[in-house]
Image (cartoon, rainbow, N blue to C red):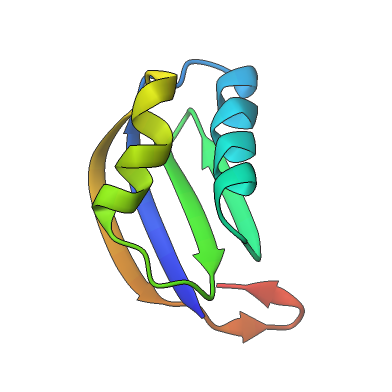
Length: 82
């Protein structure tokens, strides 16, 4: 399982978080997605191998800009992905 942490510029409220999460859910098959306008990031857990360009193609049309991209391995611990 892959874990991606994307820095996002342009989120200002909870509705922005929902918009980003919905766009990602509709575009790719996800195990988990969690956006935070406070932390200016979104955490994505999926089985797919994705690049920063893949995420940009999804989010750029919405007006949210990716400022950072980090990939790691997601581990499930006690019913939660970390």
